Length: 109
Image 1 (cartoon, helix red, strand yellow):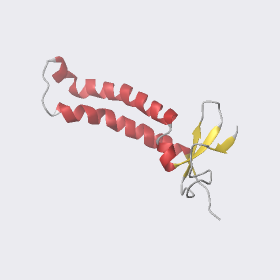
Image 2 (cartoon, rainbow, N blue to C red):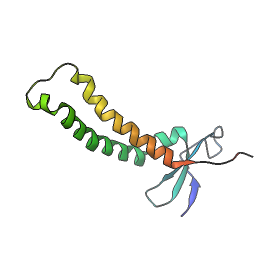
Image 3 (spheres, helix red, strand yellow):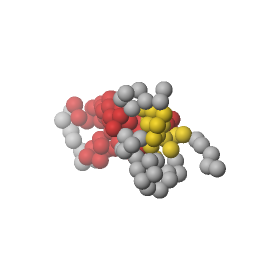
Image 4 (cartoon, rainbow, N blue to C red):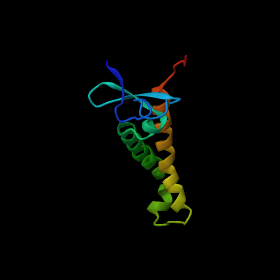
């Protein structure tokens, strides 16, 4: 498996400052790309997985927690902030887990 700095990450290719944290992110061609924290947060594959997780888990949680009110046709104003938060939490948890798993621990000499 090839491990190379990602050419789109200016912080690891010498075009910017040296990144304090480095993350291993998988690429579509099977290689591993090294990215700084800012670039890892915007990684398309990680974001896609997090969004899909949020859609599936968030929908299940909305149906469990708010289902009776929604099926009764009742839409209290509190649901306007509860439902988006119900989707945001699994998105954040999936993203955090992915970044934690991808974090490359290394020593600076």
